[in-house]
Image 1: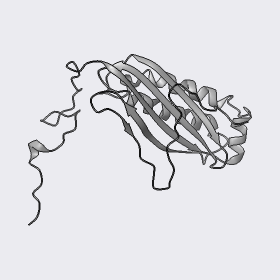
Image 2: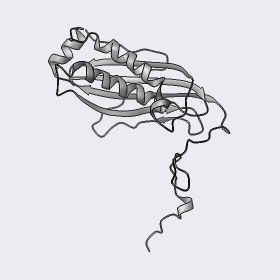
Image 3: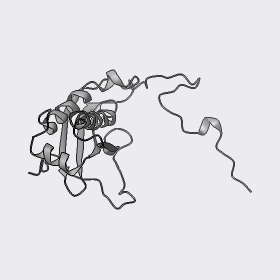
Image 4: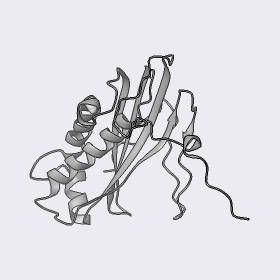
Length: 190
């Protein structure tokens, strides 16, 4: 006997769409403010020569790592202006760290965001990682047209009613990088 699909009223709903299918900002007024944190990552693959130029600070447009980290921070602070149904949040912490990975021919971008609010900071962490990656691309496109942005994704989040979530290890066996809370990992390899 085949299973019946759940009734329409019992299905999970998209929170940013009302019952009539119209977009809406989620009402969080009944939720208490809680400490929330999110970590996202992105990767930019590059030719080895380009990676060396970045590490040596010798690209035509200047210090790619510092400019991209600052761009990520600036973008996260403007997330609600760019994503229409995203709540404006008072960020209490935001860090963007870019680490060269010579073996993979890539830059690994890690962004962490924190707030004490009624909704989470996943979009701010994702925005920071995304714009940092776009900034890297912009700064190296003149010397490396094959540069590629990959794997923009949420690694973990904590706080709120849904609690903690951590991305499981991927099929390739790659476990998301973890830096203990409050500890900065190595920023750059020279």
